[in-house]
Image (tube, rainbow, N blue to C red; front, side):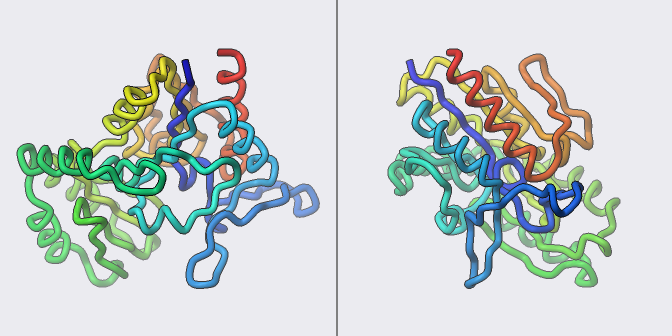
Length: 269
């Protein structure tokens, strides 16, 4: 039986320059590989060692990139190793098979959202009305499934985020603050549901997962074994579970450590 490895990408396996956390002396910093270019500029990195580990993992398991990014944002990432057959985008709203969104899966997801939570239009209207232009830089809608704000983090009122979370909770939505982005996502829109569907299709009897944010919590709880780095929302809140290993590693070296952990389990399975 294959092992399925579903991993979040940003701040779990790949890192922006601001998130690298290179705290060691410059001469001891790891060599980095750029894995994403946007508007002709390098945007995301992993260590060269992590790149080799990911290539090995892709040969040994069913590796599933699992992200809140839209399909367009995901497709500009150039990960090392074999091209994944499956990928999860838009927090589970799109299940990609050989790079193409599965229409039946997307239809199931959108029907469930319509039945179980407030509309995207209502949430978007609230964000436009309630967010302070002093710290909001952009309003965005992702694949017509959820909304997010790009903010100036140093100017952001953290109490406003807490108030937004309460407002959203009462409407079947969840709020997550990740770097310079505040996400508002419908609760039924989950990475875990898409992971279970891929496990069903592949016949995987062991699932592994990793992630750093609140939007990864359901994925980590659904997997047989999970890992989180020493940074991010989950680390900040002390999130834990019996099947979860909390790693002390932070920044880009955490991505390398997570891949070592994945490979160790896959090779021992």
